[in-house]
Structures are given as structure tokens and as C-alpha cells.
Length: 363
Ligand SMILES: NC(=O)c1ccc[n+]([C@@H]2O[C@H](COP(=O)([O-])OP(=O)(O)OC[C@H]3O[C@@H](n4cnc5c(N)ncnc54)[C@H](O)[C@@H]3O)[C@@H](O)[C@H]2O)c1
Image 1 (tube, rainbow, N blue to C red):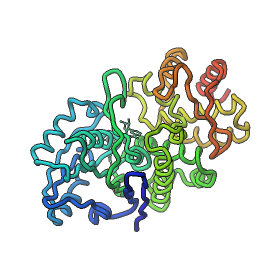
Image 2: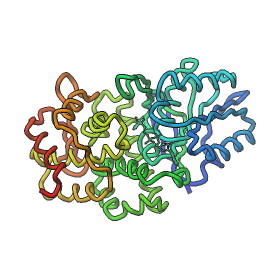
Image 3: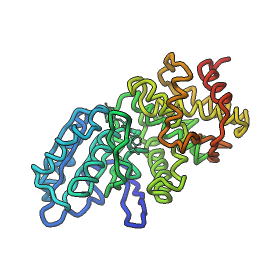
């Protein structure tokens, strides 16, 4: 049972398959030319997932090599990637070869960047193994590595040739990483779809428990929404993909202010959405009753508490948001579920008021 979605772009299209048994059946696998070769880059936390995929490729006559790596943000460094380029060279990979990325957002971002740059670009296939990667990072072709001065500062747009999202890949995912993915899923519901939000309000605990009856349709729905945004604005220049930044302005600042050590990305986005919903209300865009409804859901999903941070420290990180133009931060706010409002003139007093309120939610 699987669903295939297509990302249609002016220069081509590729399938994103969501469903079961994908690692043994490899649907829509790209053609490998006369001497097909694949390097499988896999997060060592999930290296067993590479076994059926590699066996099936070999059965189909592919020459394969596997590189299993320990994953942390440190892997998204140019230095660390030399080992991957080296493995491609050892395999004598050509422009027809394929790099397969099995892992979460770190592996996907790094593999995509290697694929964008090895011999000026080879194809890659994403097999996302975190919920966050299945609903977000594996889609859309943004690849990146970090610079000591900031995250994701070096990168390229390089679309994969195929994405295989199998719920079985998530079976070993720790609870906090599942919550992190849920954060991004809630973002899609809040920004695009009242119906999806209603479903999540009823079933988010089943989703967290990886109940396939809820999980598979939810992942497919998110993929559909993200692919629509990417198809309309592949290189993120028209403002259409900006919607996907909901909750991220505050979330990114929180991650940076805590040196990327305290929150998973989606956990920080959950805090960011608590902030953005309250800010939408305080700025008069979102009616109070609706804000209350959204905040009820957002406060139920467990995330680590806010650390003791001084507001000016966080405010400074917000000012340096990558998406800011000049000195103006582009706040993605809500007028209603599914109705996003881009506010470039949020008053300082409103920001500080919301900061105080999310630090003292009961008051
Ligand atoms: N390219 C994009 O559009 C985009 C979007 C959002 C985030 N990102 C990037 O994605 C990264 C975060 O992604 P992530 O949350 O997937 O992090 P991750 O890749 O670091 O994975 C999180 C943790 O889960 C482990 N893991 C992965 N799959 C597992 C599984 N099935 N079972 C058990 N453990 C597993 C990993 O080893 C790691 O410890 C960040 O680097 C962020 O910048 C990219």
C-alpha cells in the first residue's frame, strides 16, 4: 500500500513515494546506465535499513558500496564530507551513479550537497528515517552544510531523483525525534488546512505512537503540501515557500541561543509556533478564541521548557534571522487556520509582551 506524489518542475519531475515495503521493492528506482553504481550513505543508527535496499540493488545488477557514519550536526561540515567524496571516488562513481541517503535531515542535507557537487552534480535518492525528514527536509532540494559562523550557510538547490518514505523506517525513532517531526506536521495544518488541523487535534497521540492508519496519510498530506509550495517557488524567491517558515523565526533564534544543544529542530519550531500564534493574536490578526484553540493543541505537545534566557539575547538572534531583509524581520503570522499573514512591522512591545506571556503561560 503506497501513494506516489510527483514534484513537477520546469526542468523535470520526480516521485515521492509514501508507503510500506519500499526498501525491498524500490519503486521508481532511477535507471543506472550501462554499469549502474550506487553509494549508500547511511546513518549508523539505522544501518540495518540499508541491508534490504542494498541486497535488492545487487540483485538488480548494481555495484554498491556503503558508508555508515555517526550522525550529529558536526557531520554537516565540509571536512566531514571528504570521506563521502572519497567513497564515491573509490567506487569510481560517474555522472550516471547514484548516491543514496538513508537517515534524517543531517544525512539528507549532507548527501544532497555532496550529490550537488561531486563531478558538478550526480543524482541522489532520499530515504528519510526521521519523521521530520519524511515530512520536510527530504523534500524540496535544499541541501546544505554548516559554517563555523552559522548553520546551513553553504549549500545548493539540488533535487533528489526519488524519495522513498516508509513508515517502518521510523520504528526505532526516539520519542523526542517523533515530537520534533510532529512539530513540522502541526505547522502544515496551521498554515494550510483547517481539516488537517481537526484531524491532528483528534489523533496526534496516535501519530506520535506511529499508528500507520494515522501516520501514513499525515505524512502523505504534508508531502503534498510541501511539494505544492516547492513546485510554485523552487528556489524560495517568490515568498511562496515563506509560509513554511511559520514558527521558524523564533524557533531558529531559540536553537541558536542555546547553541543547538537543547532542542530538536521541530521542538524549537513548536516553541516558535506558540510564540507566533500568540503574536498573531497580540498584533490583532488572529481572533482570541481561535488563538486559544491553537495554543491548547500547541501546549499539549510535550517539549523541553524554555531555558533561562534574557529577552535581549533572543531578540538579537531574531534580528539576525537568515530570512530578514535589511533590518526588517519577516514574521509569518496567522489570520486564521490556513490564512497566513506576513508582517514586517511587528512592534517591539508586542514581541516582548509575547515573550513574557509564553514564559508564564498560566498568567
Ligand atoms: N533541507 C531542508 O529543507 C531542511 C529542513 C528542515 C531541517 N533541515 C535539517 O535537518 C536536520 C535535522 O533533521 P533531523 O531532525 O532528521 O535530525 P538528524 O538527522 O540529526 O536525526 C536525529 C537523530 O535521530 C537519529 N535517527 C535518525 N533516524 C533514526 C531512526 N529511524 N531510529 C533511531 N534513530 C534515528 C539520528 O542518528 C540523530 O541522532 C538539521 O540539520 C536541519 O538543518 C533541513
